[in-house]
Image 1: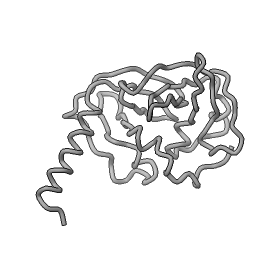
Image 2 (image 1 turned 90 degrees about the vertical axis):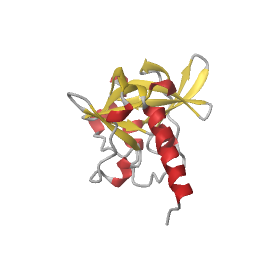
Image 3 (image 1 turned 90 degrees about the horizontal axis):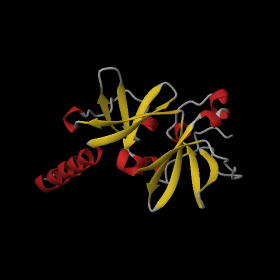
Length: 173
């Protein structure tokens, strides 16, 4: 049972999450869906670099790349959030983009199919994730943002990047 103090704390947490998302987001494509993340976390967007595989790494880790002297771990974002990845799409990494983000004082590359654009969003139009979305995927979606053409799933990068998420359900390389 929540008391008034806990309810106020919960509301403050929700407001903080909305404030962090409201503003500008970078939109990108994974599979057939449009996703976004807070643009302030993005350091840069780059095309495919030479990526060195890491043996015995989880299936969602593509490998590491050298970005101007900085070693960056590259993650297949679709695999990480539990999207079905066809072998044809998985092998075509040279045509994909890598979004470099700062997370826990480390640069991490997120391999995505295509980067769309940076858009400004209004926090009043943010919606909760629908209840009928796969449980594994919905835990990464912070909000849904409707536009005239699409629905954009805004990811919570902290949850996506957490190491303690169960990856046993992902297929191996």
